[in-house]
Image 1 (cartoon, rainbow, N blue to C red):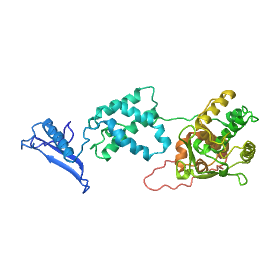
Image 2: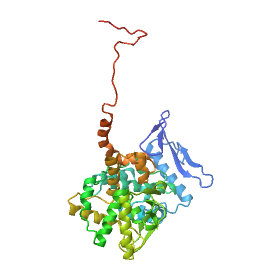
Image 3: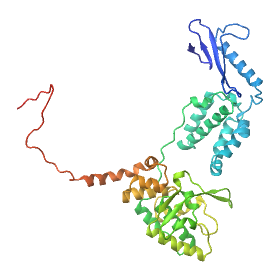
Image 4: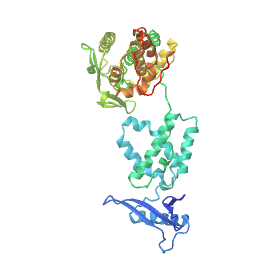
Length: 402
C-alpha cells in the first residue's frame, strides 16, 4: 500500500490499481465510525488512476451528507461562525474574555467568511499563518492567539460534524514570543513615591493603589475588586477572593472567584501597609466613600486608570513607565532580590497553582542571588589532606611508582 497526493486514496502495490478508504463520520446512534473502502467505482470498474478514485470519494461524501440531512453542506465560514461557533463561545467564556477576543474573531470572519467551510484548504491555513507572522502590526503573542483561535473554530466544526478533519492542524502552531515584563526596582519605586502629593484626595488614592500593588503582588483585577470587608487591619491580613469585571462605563461585577482556585488566598500585610491603609480608610469615611479600597467615589476604578496613574508618576519621577501588571512583577523582584524569599512562599503569596508556575515567570529574577550563594559558601569548608595515600587499587589498574 502506498499513499497518494489525494486524501483517502491509496495504491495497491501488487496490482498497480488504486482504492479509497474514506471515513464519513460517526453513527449518531451506535457511536461507531462509518467507513467505506473500495477499489472499484459504482459501475464496477477498477480505478486506474488516483484521480479516478478521489472523484469517487468526493461523490460518496456528498451523497452521504445529503442522505444524512446535512442541509448546511455548503455553509460558509461566516455563517458557521455566526450561527454555531460564536453563540457557543460567548456562553463558555467570561464576559471580559469575550469582549477582548472580538477583534481576533472579526479578523477570522473577514479572512475566511465567504469561503465554504468545507473548502478551507491546507494552503489557505498556511497562507494565513505566514500572513500573521510577517505583518508588523501583529506581535508574536498576538499572532499566536489569533491562529490558535482559528484552529479552535475548525476543531468545533469537526466536533459538530461539519468537517471530518481540521486541516489547520497539519500546519505548525505559532509559538508565543518570550515577553519580558518591565518592573521597578526598590530604588525606582522609592523615587516614584516622592511624586505623590497626598494632601490631594485623588493623589492620595493613587499613592495607595501603587503602594498596595507593589507591596502585595496582587493581580490588577483582584485589587480593583477589594473592599474594606476583605481587610483585617487588626490581624494584618488581606483576603483575596474576587476579581472585578467591567461591562460598560457604569456596569461592573465583582466575581467571587479568581483566576485559579489557588488564587483565593490570604496575604499577610506589613506594619507600614496597615498604617497607610488605616489612614486612607479614615479619609474615605470622612468623604463618605465606600465600599471599595481603590476608589475616590462609590464605584471601583478602571484598569486603564491604574495604567494612567503609573505612567503619570513615572514621567514626573523620571523613571521608566511600566504596565499595571508590572507592579506584580516588581513585588516578586523585591522579594527575591531584596529579601531572598523562598520560591514556595512567593508562589503562595502570588496565588500561583505551583512553584513551577512562579519559576516559569520569574526564574530570571533569581540570577542576582547566585552571588550571595558564592559569598555564603566562601571559606565554609575546611580542607585537610592526608599525609600518605590510603587508596588500595584492585583489578587490572597499574600504578607506576616514581
